[in-house]
Length: 92
Image (cartoon, rainbow, N blue to C red; front, side, top):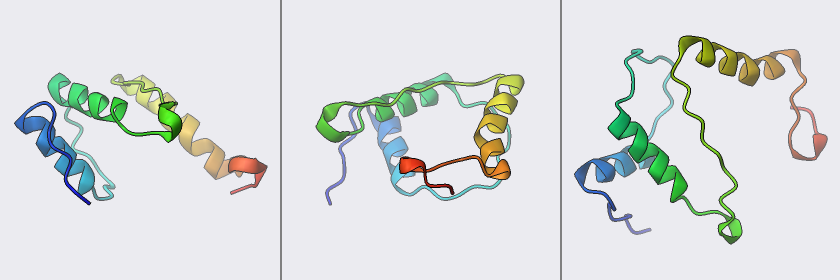
């Protein structure tokens, strides 16, 4: 598989390298993501391939502590309560 050439200069090339070499992280230092980096990440997501080029994704940037809490609860609570389903309605 060939490397994807950077479209936006050195930083975007570093971003793509970081995505390719990503690892699971349990903790974060809490420092905000700079707007330049956030924009590069969102641009990379928008350029991602999809079936029939439908690009069905939407991105939401949540920066407030309260917004992060609400999002975390919405994402995790169904797993803890056993109400989450996979495609086709099969329970997790």
